[in-house]
Length: 305
Image (tube, rainbow, N blue to C red):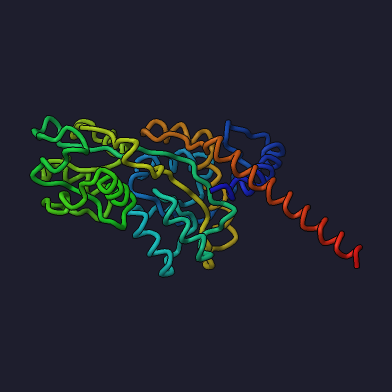
């Protein structure tokens, strides 16, 4: 997701001008208009809840008249709600799949969408709980497992791991407690209802007094990066104040100040692979060269006529 970078630069430039006139500046945050007001409907993946609550409080210290309304659930459920017309200004997904779908449907504003966070998938058990399971490879040694549904990003990652390890059929024969989001899976294990479960590393860290991490997903078993994209959603019911507030809150979410909060909760900043960026640039250069060559051939043909 690279479309958000240009939009971000434009927003920063505009807000920077306001900061200079107001004489206010904070690292990574540009407080251009302390009179900013409005309502921002923000749909967030359940795994972001704790960090986003703190980020909201920090944001409201600068913008006290902006009301942030959170809807936290699985990214698949949130995607469906947006597609069905629910009011949403910002969508913060736990996977690119759901965000990409909304971009393709012209529901998400492509130029604002950007991958900003990464997470890890881990196998957990109740604190000091007994289990023969020592890793993802022998997960079927457990009597039961708490697992997110296949419409939930962490559930999709879990099933990718099973497929790559060749244990999908064996897992499907287990007693599975399927949760509608990662929070339900975490609760099932932390409360001792299930012997093991699969969640994000950040979720496990949030209740470290109630669960133990058995293992992190093997790199060769989970090849899809666990990335979190965020961006603006088309909200036709939003007022001008709401739109301005949403843009400001999105920019704050992407700021250095907010990143410190995310890192405190176990997330890491997503950085596009240098090799991928190089490949993209090479592809663009090749395309430009092809266009130049095509134009040259056309001109030569015209001259020959």
